Image 1 (tube, rainbow, N blue to C red):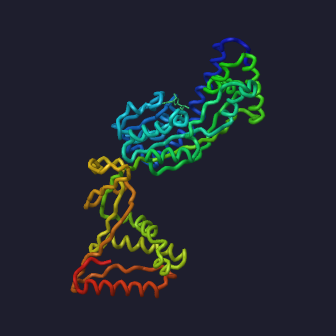
Image 2: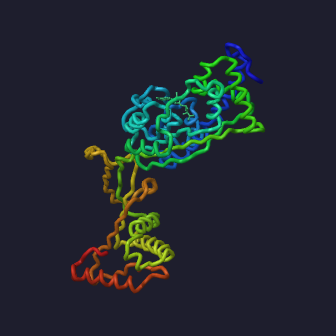
Image 3: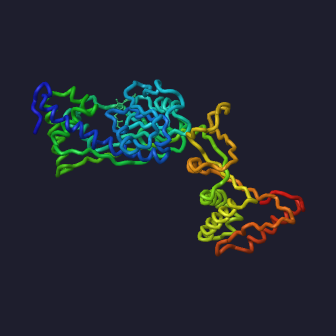
Length: 422
Ligand SMILES: C[S@@+](CC[C@H](N)C(=O)[O-])C[C@H]1O[C@@H](n2cnc3c(N)ncnc32)[C@H](O)[C@@H]1O
């Protein structure tokens, strides 16, 4: 089929475009990024913990659809879920309560608004502590190239939309940092536009993509037909067989609103031993004494396992206390942060919970720190601490002379006094 020169698009022509519009919702450029957002946002903050999900700039609802398809069963009944669209400048955030949104999913909208800094600041204001933001930007694609074809026929057309400076990895990262978001990551994701008719998809692009639609409003029917024919010819040469899918490039930025991160202190569980070992190694891996005692990469790998096994034994030892701090974003019983001084920096407030966590608490919240005390042991008490098992290759000479020196220092300082031990 090729377009006929007439003043109005006929109902037959609309009927031909209609299935393409339906197809766009099911297999258009918004679909792969929407699925990525649904999947990755859930990893950062499971939808089972959602309190308020917003599909910002929802359009026909690809993001909402992707979230419901993947997580409907897990979203708490008490959670709110809305789609918001087209509120000039303020991104509809002015209608939302401060600190309320647990999941803000903004599919292909922030890179379009005139003032992205203002839009991101208003998003930040409504995000709940620990909430997750996902936002994506279109970087390019064959359909974007085709949508500029009116310029090939009429080079003087006014069809440029000024870039808003919020689509490249660097720009998006800077905007999010400036607004105070943390844990920012930007992931490149390929997207697609499926089609099974060259004419129909080119007609769709020319009529429905806003920039092309603006352009054809300034063109004669003959020019439009010429443009359409050039688009179809090139599309056929790029994708010679049908059905086909045009390729595009997007990036998706993920960030957290962690400036009021509630931390909780718990007795360590055996399951925390691995993480304790990881934190220990992260803290001391560059320490000169550690490097002298455990001189090669292999030995230090072995040391990590030794630390894990010792942590396991210590956690079970009633003469040793091992505590861990877990971060607890969006925990229903998170500590009250009112009263924290608002200096715009990160506020960490530790709530003391000196009882074993229940299994849900133990799973929620990553261990971010640990502390260990060996209790005072009287001279006559029968007790033997589980010994360290050092990895093969340990420089025992350095290790033993260091141990001896620390024991002597302790003796000098404390003598026979009962004391907490290293
Ligand atoms: C490219 S569409 C994206 C639709 C869908 N979110 C997706 O991922 O495919 C951009 C959407 O953002 C909406 N939009 C544009 N400016 C907006 C604003 N200031 N506030 C809310 N939505 C806006 C448009 O109406 C349109 O539905």
